[in-house]
Length: 228
Image (tube, rainbow, N blue to C red):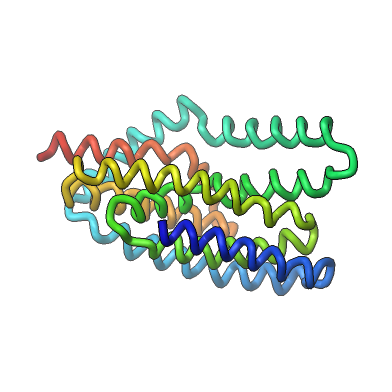
């Protein structure tokens, strides 16, 4: 849980810093910082994806995972969920609209993404917190930027992050005894490739629906069992 705890704390710290700089952060500066961090995400994802021994596993996993993801259209479902929650918050809130909107928007930003899932899986399966540590830096800086415009509600999103990622970490820890090193490596490598896709999106190079590729991680695990 170390990676998740650090991630939660950085959001809280970033949120409080954002309150101090509310309305004062230059958009050009924040954009450059996020682009620089996106390059770091690209490096982490690339180095992790190159650790796979059998590239065929990655190719088949991505192909099948993308097919399943598009059939389910996970990206669209997640966006609909966000819009549904936000609409309910707006209808049911009076004085706390800004707090609620900040909470919902930031929770979706920090929880809905490949880094949250992949990082939590790596943390639970391998005890590797590197991805979550990087995500913590990204979320902390994002929290500063978001809080400066959306208010204190962003800070409360740290609760959602802790519960969401913590649940994945604990579940992965339980499954770790049933998975060998090869299966874990397959899942981690495919997940790292999704992190590369996320980094490219952050740099506005592509508009890949990363959420629709998430089933690839599970497919990689099953392929590992079949090939073995």
